Length: 335
Image 1 (cartoon, rainbow, N blue to C red):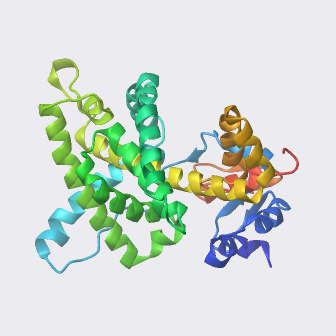
Image 2: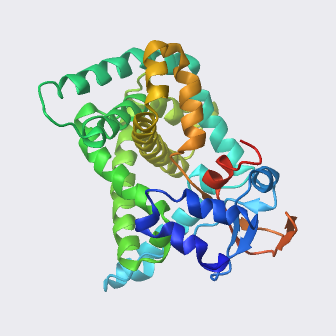
């Protein structure tokens, strides 16, 4: 297998269950150019040198382009406006400083220690209730019965989404998470469905934000929607909507993967599972190790703003760069 086709092999569904042999092969060439012109970075040392490099831009999503509908009003006026709005108000993980830092700062002010601590009892109650539903059954699906319903309930609680709407949020989060897959960027039918989902959740969020301003509560969305000096919103509505959607998807999908990957990993290492049962205080360290060993997110993409020399290779300006985080997490030169 040539280095130029390794990423295609990694994305192949048949290799998703165990991509680590491919990652080991990737690390033999720390920076490898793929057939599509992108550059894969795979060793811990190379990744560490690039992860905070300002020459790598997070603003690498293709421009929003809603498909033609045949309706002149939508195709020539409404959709171009929507595309322009989406392109200039991406979620903060797809924004560079100073916009990224500003939006992240707003979120961190609401993601307080007190709020997280207050959520602890609610989370414990939810976990108990979900486990109780499984009692007396011969089989249990960890994903359907725990990993999926728990995170969406928690993130909805933190945001202040009514409990009755959690099922709809679950469906939206699942659909939008697929938008992060590399293939989704070039799948026209998928792009159309994602655009429709994004519009639906945006309309919902717009209505909910108005309600939070009329009747604020002790939740993150109320705090983010609050008005600051001179009665102006602290965060603009469009950025607020994109941030709320990001919190929903990122707070849901990654946690689903962490719970599921974590349980599978412990079942594959029963000695570690027994140690955890005997000493629950080990949990924080176990979770940190699982995040390294079997992470919820395996890679992130960036765009090179200038030529970058790393690990004996030069990444040209304008190139797409794929940071293979999961490969670096198992680099024997570091771990």
